[in-house]
Image 1 (cartoon, rainbow, N blue to C red):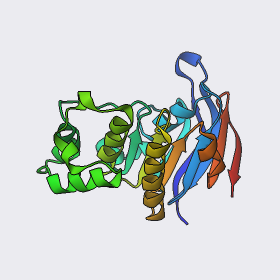
Image 2: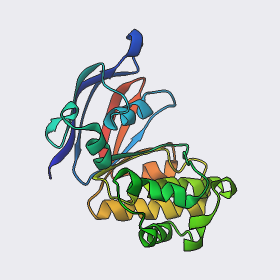
Image 3: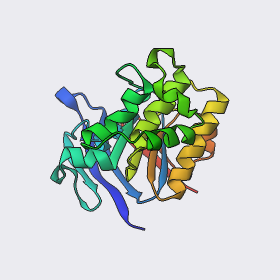
Image 4: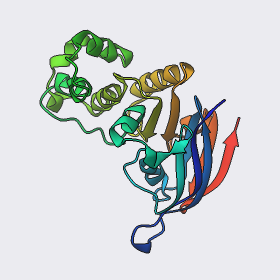
Length: 217
């Protein structure tokens, strides 16, 4: 296997306030890595560093064999896609959100592809014109997720995306993520969910800003 992320002594300490300290971690291409640990331990900060939403205050992050900083950020973020814990939808309709990935690539909106993507998460094609104000929390999370997947990234970063979802919706999201991973997409997911932790292929614990353990099955 090839390495997609290599972190060497990565720290994040804005204004001398240490949030992450001396993180050393290697993630292989196609791996499904689960990150867990207490609230406030630095898990989301680590994901944001991987997503280039934050910059390490020391240490290095390599992506696909090159320093993270060598990449154009727009190009990088098309390959490394970050899905927030709280779904952020905009505009008025579901279509407005699913058209966005096409618009930023200066492509015409492919309505058929958007309808197909709705089917990935068990949502009907008719939802395309539904107002986002009428969506449930689970529907919003699924829309936000497929918005990240209309153009397949190499890496999907998931920040507790199943928190607050009912069991049926959680199963739908799990199925999609497992299918993407089986097709070779690298998945890095933060969770507190005991079922997800028990099912993890590889598990990292972050406690008080430090990587405490790396368990691989």
